[in-house]
Amino acid sequence: MGRPVTIVMIEDDEGHARLIERNIRRAGIYNAIRHFGDGTSALKFLFEDSEGTLAKSPALVLLDLNLPDMTGVDILARVKGDERLKRTPVVILTTTDDEVEIKRCYDLGANVYITKPVNYESFATAIRQLGLFLSVIQVPEVDA
Amino acid sequence: MPVSQRFFGYASLVMLALGFAVLAILAGTAVWLTQRSQDEASWVRHTIGVQATVSDFSAFLERAESARRGYLLSGDAAYATAAREAIAALREPLDALPRLVTDNPVESDRAARIADLARRRIASIEQTLAHPASDLAAARREFAASAGTSLASLRDLRADMLDEENRLLAIRSAAERFSVDALVAVSIVGAVLILLLGVGSVLLVRAYLHALRRSRADLEALNEGLEEAVRERTADVLHANREIQRFAYVVSHDLRAPLVNIMGFASELGIGLDEVSGALRTAGAPEPVQKIVEEEWPEALGFIRTSTEKMDRLISAILHLSREGRRNFTAEPVDATAVVEAVVDANRHRLDEQGATVEVARLPEVETDRLAFEQVMGNLVDNAVKYLSPERPGRIVVRGRDLGRRVEYEVEDNGRGIEPRDHERIFDLFRRAGPQDQPGEGIGLAHVQTLVRRLGGTISCTSQPGAGSTFRISLPKIMPRGSTAWADPLPS
Image 1: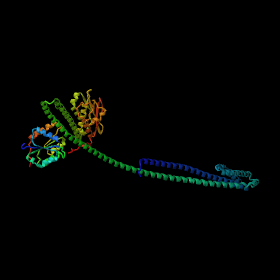
Image 2: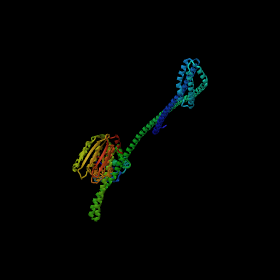
Image 3: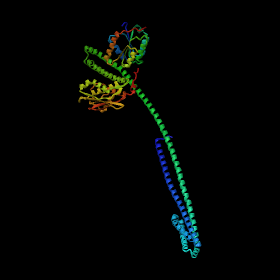
Image 4: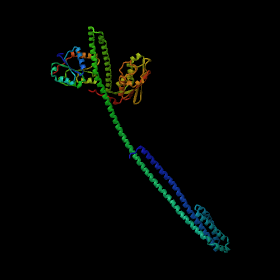
């Protein structure tokens, strides 16, 4: 990665967020992680970005589909429909494993779709592999 | 006027009875009146006969009298002959007259007196005629002595008799005319009555037909309403079903999220615990504390983990069922025999292990959703293999019957069987029966029932504990198109 990538994690379940973060760290990824518990504040950050974080570094979105105020699909559509953000990689990380939903997300431009396994070993492995993936992935700059 | 069937039945019966009664009365009256008028006519004829007899008798007597006088005056034998002929002719009416009037005492009396007078007169005439023509002087003297005495009263009697007969004739003729008039009147009244009944019957039948037509129209309207109601109910049921599918989907996802946390943090605790126990050991913590950290807490974490895993399997099962409910079913011709044989082949290893045999009869073909049918037969055969009895060599029979618009398949085993109280329960989700010595979550038969219902069929079970079970599914030969209506795109 050229410049350090900011990981934008949109996840309403605090426990999940914590587990994801721990496992990412265990995989040796120390990028900054910005966590948002609802869709509204996440969208505000992505589209308004008062601190200019996105201007300073490229971003990667970790997105849960089940959010209290909107569905992750709405956020995905907004991000992929935005001229500035559309090249930002979006990783869907959710409990939903319905085929229709998975297809819909890829149709909207999701880059990776991962189902959260209940079994923790599998979960930890999946997140660590995601970490490995994050360590080699090339993320484009967010156009200012 | 609305005419009920019961009223129509009664009314038409009454009208028919009335019609027959009028006809019978008419016929009886006619016969009676005809008889009467015939009687009266014969009486009229009788009276006329009496009158004729009286007239004949009088005429012959007058002629005999005239001939005697001629004889007395002229002594001509021709007069004597004529007188004798007249007397001979007179005999018959004279004898007949008393017989004719025996019905009437007054006339009978008169007739007797006339007969008496007439006989004396005849005797007198015969006495005159007995004198020879050469000696008529004595005869003339006899005649002079007797002449005129009885003849006048004879004429009076005759006149009385004729008067009486005329009176009777008048009465009897009137009676006869009355009978004939009555016959005509009765016929006319009867005809009018029958006509009225006929008109009434026609009106009644018309009213009844009208009522019938209206009730048929009502029935048709009702029928259409019923179809409409059925459509509405079906829509309601489908809607409710979609709601349930959606509910199951949402609930199972929302339940999964906390499970991820429970599992995750239990594992995190376990990771931390290893370090804590190592540190405690190095620090030389008391034995009971070490026991807690090294044995009790790991055991507790183990229970949390196995329970969570079990819960995850159950939720997955619900998800699976709800997904089956949403899948689009498409009907295609399915070779049931081939499907079952493939299922049996898939179980071949386990069957051989248990030394069990499977007999697949020639099964009727069916037009249904292939995947669902495969899953149903797969589950039933799998269950049959799973629950064979170790006490006897297993034997599984799959057979089918073509019932016209439906087909029936049976999977029969000689396995351990199911208690009667469990026959319904085994189709419930997560419910199992008998010794829990086989792996499984209690999903198979619930799944089978869901599938069979969606295929438009039914499933039932008969079983004898210790003897074996038979599962019977009945499917429409051609799957109704409505079966696919449950399919619903995933809610966002």
